[in-house]
Length: 237
Ligand SMILES: [Fe+2]
View 1 (cartoon, protein in one colour):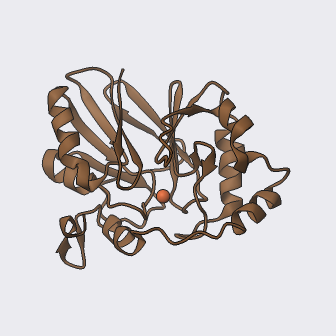
View 2 (cartoon, helix red, strand yellow):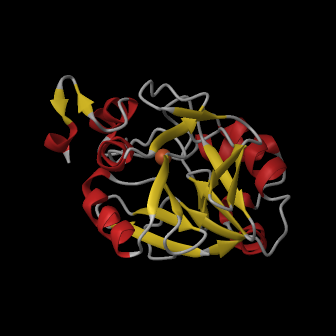
View 3 (cartoon, rainbow, N blue to C red):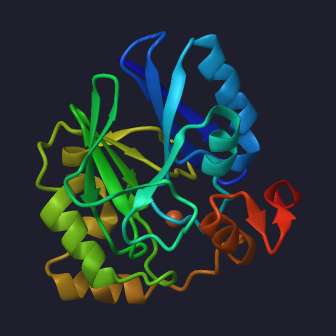
């Protein structure tokens, strides 16, 4: 398998490029608009055909690159069926399988950070979006976030997977690139709670500033990063 973890230092976003083999079909998870040229160059260098660009949820901290990738190489633009992004060309639901050649990505609906958040399971690894971060969890105080739903997503869907499952999140702010389910169960401070209510209380007690880009990024991402109020998205990048 071909697996590339790419990083946007402005928003501390991880983007994942996956393919079964060089010369074959590829998919990309959580591309950032400003880095689309870099992704396209890598796709060309590896002789890949990018068929699918996926957002785990509508991001509030960066503008998505799925629209620009679609324009460049005609890949499908995919988000979950709960997403308010009307631009997407492919919607998936709980348990659905997304494919690129022999790659099989299983969509897991994991609301809480937002009501359109998904994680993706593939073989030995899990792409957790902003649901499960390394030693953290995604905030639940905007975009229809719900700490109780996030507890259910974490404890009933993700943490029940085998402990050696690798965890690849959508962000890290301290340079950590990968973890595992077992490692997070034991060492993630947000997960050391006695009950669902204790988790909700913990999240309610966080006093966070709004994401820097939320007023620009959320409307832009509803159009797959292609436009905001008639302006090209590049103006905001
Ligand atoms: Fe997010």
